Length: 334
Image (cartoon, rainbow, N blue to C red; front, side, top):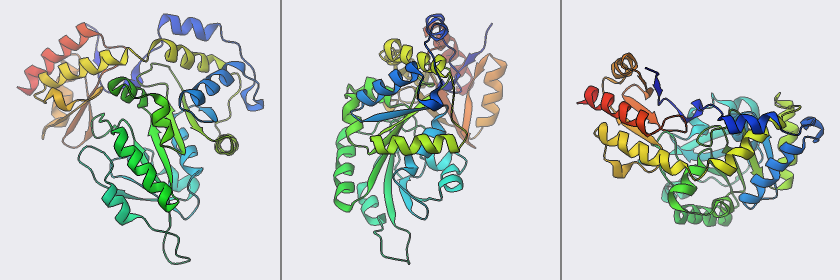
């Protein structure tokens, strides 16, 4: 019996129709700005979120590094939640490549603590303290369990940032899940951010690709830095075509992943009402042992901490597989 892989939604494989779209893609040299399929994808993404321009990147981590560096420079800081992907899961790339530091607030659901942000914010006071250049939020919040950031909280943060002259970065790797779960228009999410990053290779099922989205100036600057970091790509329309196909066919189906996650939550003894999108977090002192036991029974799950299991539903796990995984996990978790 085949393995059921719930470790991440990055594990999806392109569908037959996506492969066909990739095979027939019109291509050119993207470093010269001559790949028509890439240009189409970038223009479409920028339009969806109400921004001027976008830049296709090979990875979400690169997209975030490029995005953040457009709003924070060497020796400046970004404020973010303590479990934010930019702080925890990008191997210190922001400090290593662009010379910024981070300070964090903590929120049980990964949300915005505006009181904490107000207290932490540091204006430019000359050569004494690190100034706050930007505030970063993540929607949905990965390590908080795929949680949603309410639009009113994001709007309040945007208003505060404007009042103190700070920029807002949105890590929207799974913004598509937020859009489907809440019905919030993508442009409304885009309106709270000066610059953002979105991913095509998680819930949307493309094999590769993310994008930076922002002003024309920010994207022009990011294009230079993408090349500097080794991310300049050539006939990459083959990959951009997968992203276009995903936008056409794989957004609304994310609702299935959210339903499947709630089924898995129930099997794991987690209140389904607390599972807002496609990620289930289970706290267990024997997390590592449970990963091994589940693998022996044909279900792959991951640890994201010494006592934390994470299950992620996605395009390649249908209802029958979810039901089988739920039976296995219910038996192991008691």
